[in-house]
Length: 377
Image (cartoon, rainbow, N blue to C red; front, side, top):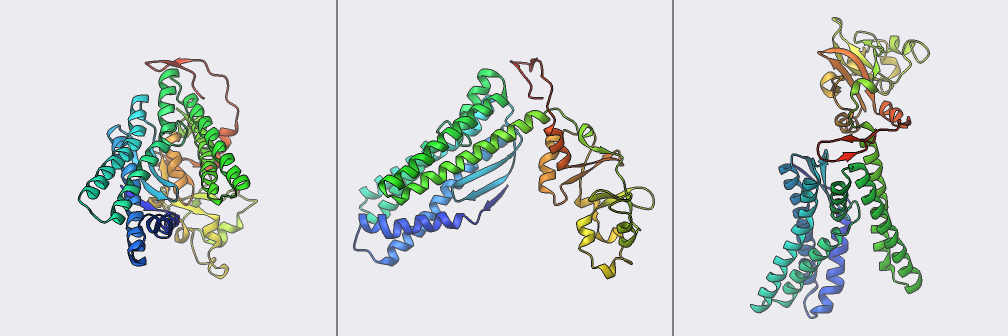
């Protein structure tokens, strides 16, 4: 499992360090050296990041135990995120995956609080006790905030699991949790700006910033759920462009350019075939354009193409939903559709976008084995 650090992590480390070294530590325990304050502040900020990582690792471990693939974890300025590939198979699994995060933070807070009491009993340095107590409090605060019933927080996942269990409709449940997330976000934005405007407290910008993040994330999550609902059960063969125009790998770039954009080559990416007719890769206009004009007369398409091993491939019967993340991650944003090695189509993110733009006919309720629900598409 890959663990990444966004550059904004440096911002939160710096803010926590400065706030503790210049504020909380010297105010609570004056008389220590600046080196002591700053060293302990840096250490406390690092332990705080470790507690965030533990929160996300708990999500990832439980997700894997519930048959949900985990791509990795990214820590950033406002916390962390475990990148899950796919959805929980049931409301109960969703509840377990979402609930373990706040529980982990709450447990960490309780352990750290006990450690602070123990250190105080043993007459340890008051400055150290203060740092451990702060870590305990921030972890409890993290647990409480994440438990709020609003997407994309863990509490929003719990709310979605409950609504999913009650209605049997995952899309409707996601819409409800996203609406709660936007409501909480706007509340925090208003409270934050009111604090700045009427009380003159610039710290109100923090809840406003977090609220704005919640609004954006909840809106994006609702949109993602709509896409998943619309593409549920749709196969690649229904969306792909069939029998795409191909380019011979032996053709020079000059010959290729002579055929476009008003000739045979009207698109911006083309499958490349070898002399025996097999698929060799994919060439894009951008790759061709990057080649120096004076070299195009003797440079072949094969020289600048993406080899087949670097291109996303799919079968006609593959679900579009499973293919979409791979398309978004790949630099070409396209997939070659192969049927037992034979090229039958090409699929781009734009093809899926066009398909989503079409209105869907009204669907009739169907039974999913446990509850009746109305499919999104």
